[in-house]
Length: 225
Image (cartoon, rainbow, N blue to C red; front, side):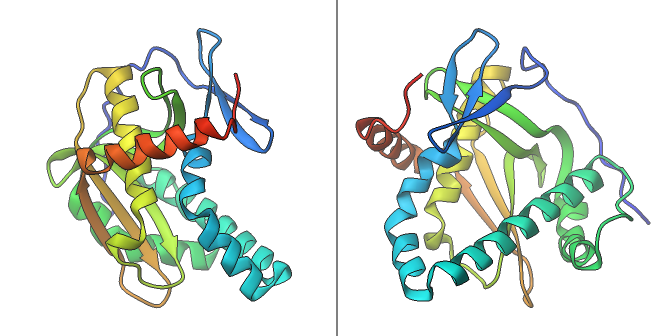
């Protein structure tokens, strides 16, 4: 029996935000005419040295192949999860994408409660950042920022501080836009040939990393509005 999810979208003051690319970085345009860089662009500098070393080790051709595959898979899995949580038909997706949903369905059905937003565009004047959050919902009864990830291999929580910093930003943005404080952040990860992984963290544990990375991003002058 298919689970039916309840939705209660909160007013953010706008329907969506227009995005564009500036110097290879995604930029969000706000209703008042301001521009803010994407939080994912800002936080990408956390792993830049590790990624550069990996690309050098495997070669540019292989790195591009793996990167394209991961990006394509991630986009498809996000799309099917969004459809599922919207109580919409998911039959059109390819078998391997449907399998990812099947892997995650027990977690979604058990833990996701009332949904406050899906693929919602957010921004924060306080942070000077914007982004698009996967899911804002009750998770095990607690209002949470929920992020869906895919991975070729199991990861440990200490390997993904950038993910939690990203969700911390979304939590701050959402509170600024809606007035609803959220401190619980959850990663739901589908892993190739393994059981899914769930990580939970408190928003405030990653505020320092978020702010330090944003300060470094600004210091490098990687964005100018």
